[in-house]
Amino acid sequence: MRVMAFDYGTKRIGIAVTDPLQIIATGLDNIHPNNIIEFLKKYLQAEQVERFIVGEPKQMDNTPSQSAIHVKGFVNLLKKTFPEIPIEMVDERFTSKMASATIAQSGMNKKHRQNKELVDTISAVILLQSWMGTRF
Image (cartoon, rainbow, N blue to C red):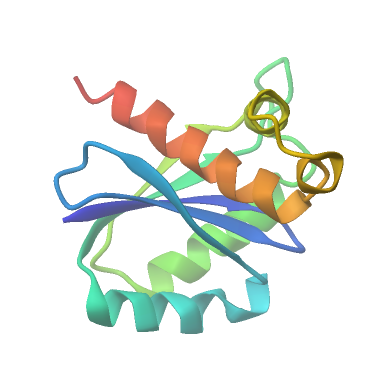
């Protein structure tokens, strides 16, 4: 079964998934928060997901950041809507900067490098890869 990761934002949620063998993390999409439950219900009809990974926003001193309240609301919505799927939180500090650096190093033109949707999706991939790296 797959594992799905979310980089939550109030404008977009970046989504990444593993392959069924949980070897590779791939960017899936980014969805407006108002549409996420409908998107997930449709996706879960076609694919089995065993776990959700959600980026936990923290400040440098390890305290919750200002956006943590929004993420908590999102996690509660996931728990209520999909109670059978466990949720794990992963520190998301620096994921957006790492995603931007990855895009810059990829050789994409400036227009693509400034695409915030792409940054959110790649941030979700980085979150998922980070989680996958801690399993072994």
